[in-house]
Length: 361
Figure 1 (cartoon, one colour):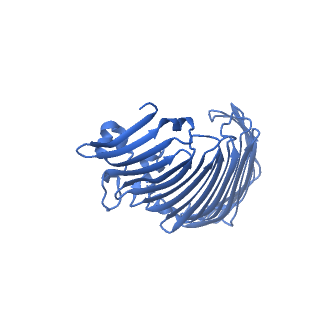
Figure 2 (figure 1 turned 90 degrees about the vertical axis):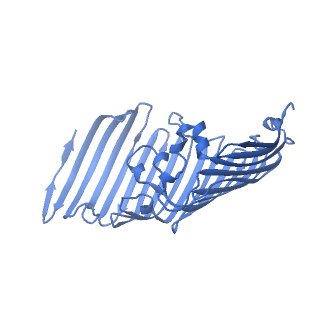
Figure 3 (figure 1 turned 180 degrees about the horizontal axis):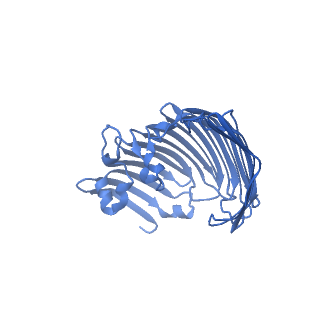
């Protein structure tokens, strides 16, 4: 009928997949009609073989048996169950579930009010995601050497989101192998303001980055700002990362602070570590323009003990102060760089070498 889509007991089968659905959709829901009805009930078992017929490149993304790193059984069939009922002003997503046996389950519930109306919309969404076994993330990340070593692990994630008008608020709790990640986020669609907070507690990074000597991570991060384009004069961002503990190469890094901000075409960065074996303080600032980036940096290196950090088998440490002024183009090429190194001290075994001022122009 005009303005309405009705689907009754629709069934589609292939040798490997099946789909059944019933639907009743008043298309005026797209015109913000609060009384527009939507009823959708669907079930599907879709074989990855059929997905390949439609989208041949899909096989590099979905999880199949040849990409698994565990002995758990895997079924190359994705199952979907959808149950949505209501009118635009009060719509209940009783079920929106996806799963692949031996890989993941995603259970979603939601209550929606006027989802197509930017002013009146009010939505609550809750998701539970669980994964099983291990699989490589190589095909999901940029093509780098590191991507070949990152392996996803069994985890459970609880995600909640609330949308009111142009405001979006969300939180998530992810548990994985005894570690925990808690995150919260806020975003305003109209003014593009955002705020994100993340806490990581005893996350075993080594199981994700196989082949590396990285251990447990405990850290906190905060990010806030407005707008995303560097061309927008109102763009601003402020970030703070506090590294409580991180084990790397069998050395425990502690209490490292990283702060960064950018506002009104100016940026600043600071890094502080007060450990005896890694006594470093970096302060940098500058301006960024459409074609140029300027940077002024001061680094106080009280001590970097490479042997204690397990980067050298022989005694080797460095101490120095550094000052630098640089101008870079938008293609990352250095146009000008003035570097001054002072109080340089290098220790190697029982010897220590010292130098006065070293200038690099």
